[in-house]
Image (cartoon, rainbow, N blue to C red; front, top):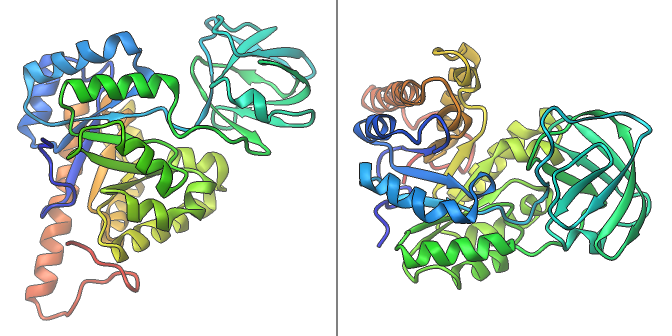
Length: 354
């Protein structure tokens, strides 16, 4: 069933597909570079597109695919182009799908309205708009804009105090059924909250398929042991973590999750901003290469390129740069072992490779 053995042998590279990479020549180029897994992000893929995209990718590669769920996350709906909201303005939040304006936007999933109350804060997108709820009802809420700014379509949101959400959205359930019918062997559970949530996902996918649990929220951090134990692999999504964890703390949270996953002998991958410069340029910064080196030294089994290959100017070039970084890492580690310098430098209790 699955074409990839998670965490097996060499360090692995996972690439997110998007507008920049849904091209035959790009897919073939990534395949030639021995990318291990292609990721389809369901947060930016309509249900009606899923089967078509799976079949399209399979036409041009034998690299296995992973469906990445929306998961237990609040998002806004589509909004009109160039939408800006201003401090002090009133805005309605509704569960029905509408094209958002300065007066009304969609908030989903619908279960979010069960947890909103007067005084709740809704922060949309990274360092973006902040709303304060002033009233609630059945499937709606009113809010005032505390921090204004631009609003984009389908952006993630953080609600404070947090609200209870199901581990899978309605769209995820439909998507998993499509994946099961088409024999997809890998599924990423976004915003994993517990080992139980991982188990609920397993019930909806093929028996031998792999579940990659994404730890990207405070509740995921608190429950990381049960999540790691229940999963075939875990993925540290630093971008979404930074919505709930201060930026300066994210590196230490990453190290903690990687170390804990290594203790469980569970493959662990790291995503977000690895080569952020290569979204718009054809070269990374020294700081980004240093980040990759330290991530590998910490004990990660693989790296995930997201925006770099989904919307970047040169998806194949980004993979080439990661491969060069991995090659140097493996040469350095091999040389250190042969040179009689003892075990590689690493955090206590970490295991660099299985």
